Image (cartoon, rainbow over all chains, first blue to last red; front, top):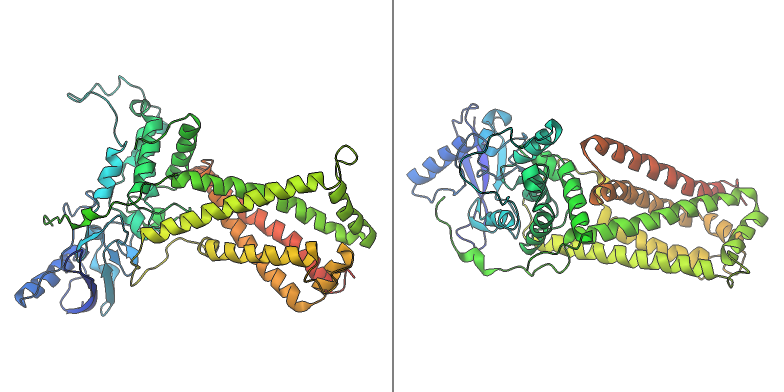
Length: 251
Length: 233
């Protein structure tokens, strides 16, 4: 395959970036999108240029590092992670525009790599349970209804890649926060902090500078794990209940 | 990439005074109040088909509900205050969330493709502004009569005078269609915001939103079209 790549290049957060066009030949349709970027980078290094910085880690769709905007869609045209996207999803001669996630809460570090630590701080605000750690307890000691276990597991498949923020017209992290709130809020172990969790996590997400949710659904449609919009409804339900119960965010 | 710079740490976004979800709840509740009023308004409008006398009498009745227990216009004034508060709250929440969204993405994408959003969802904000301007025009036209072709006439005469003009009717139709789309997304959004939706109800909520707004707007459109085509004069 021969491709024209339009890649966002930005030296560091302090300078203005821009789109740079590269021509790429001999790309196999069986390559993953990241392998195609590896080929581009080899070509750039051989030519004495600075390679394109992009995040990646596991390359098997479970770590959530490799998110980039491909032709205006988070993780590209398939509902999967960028590493699991293959070049057969494109046609020979295509022009592909690659940009970093765009949100003030996700500042660009370099080129396509963004700082997603805002998500870590949302987790720190309440995405945990206060159980003593150590040996895993006997799995049957706390019964969980099958329906709740399934729904909690669906929410727990969130890998925190940030595609929801990237795809959202408001740059809202609602689907991410909602997935965490749902995942822990449906389990018996998550009950003691349920109210504090939702209030503090939403307050932190606002503090980080994410936008508000307008229930458009771009997030869920772009989520590589297909997290459902119902998690957002559950977050709202829990939050309004907690506010009525008098729970206020920690400052 | 292990080269994590610290430059991004300079920015500390302003702590949110009110949570975004609370603002959305304000939006949902005020929206529901206005929606209930619209239902009553639409049903009231249909009285135009029972003739000039009945329609004018209905208009008079609205101003005298509760008499003689309470002075004239008491109930109407209460309704107006509740609606005004709802409009202001709705507008405040919308503008505040709009600004938050703008701050959240200062740099736009070079290429952005919509995957799931409906046209209704995309036109919520500017559509809402247009609907607000329409409401102001509509009040000046038919309630106050200041810009009505037959400003001093009875409510029935004003209505006929306005809708006999195809341009005014066209503006009303456009604004009502925009309002319909606003409601289509708004009803769905309110069920989500108030935490009433789930995967099973999602389809039902969306279908109900479409059916309800279509029915409501169709009811509103009946009157101007009937005047324009001479069914009511």
